[in-house]
Length: 88
Image (cartoon, rainbow, N blue to C red; front, side):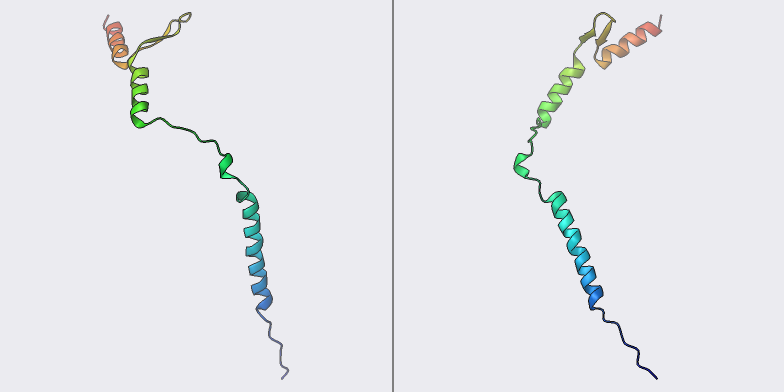
């Protein structure tokens, strides 16, 4: 019987390590070159400030488009007007 040569797993291991190395290099080019100091910092209002602004916006009446008769009303007043209009 003739001896058949066995294959070494060394080239396969080197190929896998090389593929990981290429992957890491590509990731570093994509995500590693961004400088975090150039990012714009967005300041957000606190929860209390946000709620106060929303309450003022939703609670007050304001003329949006006078020519077309569009106004912003509080929801309670709008419901009263709809009920009054439909009860006629």
